[in-house]
Image (cartoon, rainbow, N blue to C red; front, side, top):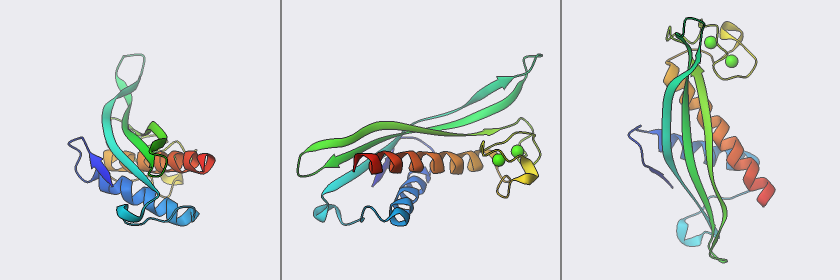
Length: 148
Ligand SMILES: [Ca+2]
Ligand SMILES: [Ca+2]
């Protein structure tokens, strides 16, 4: 379902899975074989940016952001047009220490910091990817539900 235009291996599968899980939870769309589908959801990762975001007074980096851009097309087979055509983004933050469980940064911006947050641990970019995918799939689903 999702094409991967970047070198980040496994990402497209993660996003596909995230979207399908969300659809199933919400119960609004049924995933069927392409030949039986009334609409087709196509997505590809268009860009990944991993760069410094915040600097301190000494101009050292204090926070990095790992941002994923996903281009989504939701195509109506009968009307032969796109219902949704949009690029979605999500990011995770991480500090220079590389230890997100003690970097003083709210890496997923959920208001809970370090040990206060149940899932704030692990490899920074893997965590950022998870957070970005969660955000992107939520935004896609919101758009689909308001368009539906
Ligand atoms: Ca957090
Ligand atoms: Ca943290």
